[in-house]
Image (cartoon, rainbow, N blue to C red):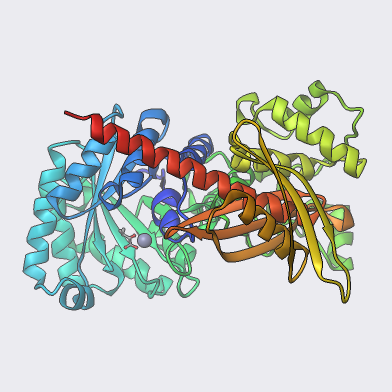
Amino acid sequence: MSNQVIIFDTTLRDGEQALSASLTVKEKLKIAFALERLGVDIMEVGFPISSPGDFESVQTIAKEIKNSRVCALSRALPKDIDAAAQALKVADAFRIHTFISTSTIHVENKLKRGFEDVLEMGVNAVKYARQFTDDVEFSCEDAGRTPIDNLCRMVEEAIKAGATTVNIPDTVGYTIPSEFGGIIQTLFNRVPNIDKAVIAVHCHDDLGMSVANSITAVENGARQIECTMNGIGERAGNCSLEEVAMILATRQKKMGFTTNINPVEISRTSQLVSQICNMPIQSNKAIVGANAFSHSSGIHQDGVLKSQNTYEIITPESVGISTNKLNLTSRSGRHVIQHRMQELGYLDSDYDLDALYESFLELADRKGQVFDYDLEALMFFNQVAGEPEYYKLENIDVLSGSGKIATATVTMTIGDNNKITEAATGNGPIDAAYQCLLRISGLDINMDTYKISAKGEGKDALGQVDIVATYKDQRFHGLGLSTDIIESSARAMVHVMNHIHLAKAVADQKKQRHHSEP
Ligand code: KIV
Ligand code: ZN
């Protein structure tokens, strides 16, 4: 048996499923490119039957991604498999992933069927999917709670029907490592044709066991781990890609497994996913948390200064975090910025140098010194929010203070040159600015969540505002970044407005296409 562990990323399917606002095709494509550079073997990028938007993103990604295999999810139903095959067929090779629940709890209470029915549906789905591709994955949903005899039968029959990968999910994150490892071991002992397929695992983190369960499964014969960047996913999330990749790399001598993951891409990919998905990373998160490499106690600091390996088992550089902090000023030219970005590991194609330089100069004028983390924050911000702006914030003035009614005056341009100024009061300066923006745009937007966080260090940090807002039953994520938190707040709302404008334009285009079809 090979010692290569296949990394199957499901950030854009299981991860995306859990977000408060769904991602645009462009946002998903940016993440897909980052995952490809990271070296994931397979990326599951959507559930095409679930919505036209999902179908379109699967199709777009399948067209663009060349170095990872693209996969789409389908229930064990012909119409789902047809949709997955239709969306994926633009790729040279692709995987169809089909699944059905096998646990008694799911079979009886959710599917209202018997196990024999489910077995037949699973087998038929695999056979049906094999018409479109020779790379078919079958998942026994809630395998962690499935009676072992049923699980063995299901796995054997799925392989007989043509599944090339069989996935054993701990869908509800219920098992503990010895138990989950035991399930995998039993499958290897009892399923006669088990060597004809790759055994995969897909663990959720409800009890914080997803990584431990996945690693134990590999020790017992599984050779594919399904995971997501930063562990995002349903409820408590999925197994973290960065954690399993770094466990297998750091403990390679002890465990003997390899993956195709390029660790220096981890930090960048993690940041991008966090920004685009509006999912902050807890600061003590292994590998990618802000504190993952910072030493607080005097004894630890002293040890690390004497020899890094006293308290560090992985270096920050090995996961792509630069510790060389160069500061730039408004006198730094474009080529200095480009050179610094290269040193930080970014390709020229990762960002728009003109846009980055423009925002760098603006920031350098305000802050004096610009640090690496500022540059990266600006780049991520431009990637997420830097689309062509239909609504453009021109100016914002606020008047507020203790015991005063907050007043804002905002000027915004709509379209090419429709410049409008409005003044409004509010229960605080941000509310007053939002009243102005809503009046100018005439959009009926409801704010669901507002979050402010510091990007960078100390009192110099940039203020990032993330909001989720609803417009006509659709939710949008808006991002604003500035040295001034009222301006960041306004920018986040303007970003939402631009998202709404884009969504309307796409819907209008679709309508027109529909009317012009014969
Ligand atoms: O958690 C789960 O069981 C899933 C399946 C669709 C693989 O996400
Ligand atoms: Zn899942």
